[in-house]
Image (cartoon, helix red, strand yellow):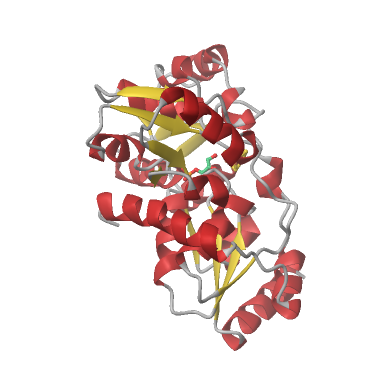
Length: 303
Ligand code: 13P
Ligand code: SF4
């Protein structure tokens, strides 16, 4: 059954000159049928470069919106529209404007896990792969970073800048406790602990490496170590294990599942391609300003 749907999806992708992009947390069968599975940065870069007419995005809304921001001439489709990111919903332009009115005119660094309208109000965007480089690229000493308080505090710890931060967080990464990490480390003392910067500061303090999802894939591949504790959403275990069949990967807890990332099924992708729905559109005035912030990030990090 899966095989038949997969074949139909691949046939429709080629018929429609479409590309299928999937985030590293997507279900295994979606990653397997995709043209590229990657982190937010890689997916945004490919979305801007592709010559396909249609981008089918399997991830969450802010990722598909970013594709629409960098590729206005393409049709961007999401197989389901009920796949949001709770962290992105923790900020609005109105609240940002109110905060800036208190802080004064300082640059705003916005994590891509945010609404397009907030990107449009920002100086520059960042992802988990480049947040420190983006903060360091700004000539100003003081800045506001949104919406992830954990990523912001992590970036602040790596620079001498004054980083004001927003009080948003990822419910999945923020719930991981230092105690759970210590239990996992005690169970697997030989394993290296890789953590995503959306985790709390006390969790990151226990990490051997703090990395984006694709950063973890590269780290595990390049490491001489044979085992790893994975401090991020559990979907990443699939590509880690696939790329490193002889290495061992342990979940840091059983609690790290992003329901939004798990909602998309192969049948949704097939329906999306058959019916060319649901199209993700960003109003042109918002898109143009958001594009500036995304482009500036891509220029600074050389990609
Ligand atoms: P990455 O960009 O590291 O893949 O992270 C995206 C995300 O949503 C993490 O929760
Ligand atoms: Fe958003 Fe967290 Fe899910 Fe990533 S894991 S998409 S930050 S809710």
